Image (cartoon, rainbow, N blue to C red):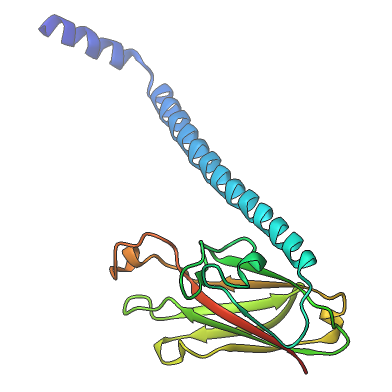
Length: 208
């Protein structure tokens, strides 16, 4: 056993230091490449799912042109679930949770000759160790508002004016960006592992 150990030590000693560092660097680069490839795969998969869901929501909106005033609810089995694009979990009894930093709603309206007032009724996920969240909303790529929500303002609706120039096509793509979604398990409030941003219950759209 001692002879085998000495022989092994001799072989290791014979390997130049620069080769050992080169091997270590190659292993590190390979590991980094694997992590980057996995991250890209997850991102692309999520983007693919969002594209698919946005496509279905677009088709639903085209087939369900709505008149104003519009009140749409998003609980399980309710009127607005077909309008939900990417970025949402499955609807629940009273509404639907956003599933990532970006979520979409697709609408088609019959009357686009004026400005509109849009109100989103959504409750953010806020707890003691996750007490602030910011939601930015754009419609057809036009940013219409940004709201910081804390426990004292959690129940306030998000109201915005949609200009006629933005909505004249009759097609509305409402995009919510949530800057700090978190999972209840991550912040210690429950065992729910989902990344939660806002719980959307309904929206209202009326002519200005």
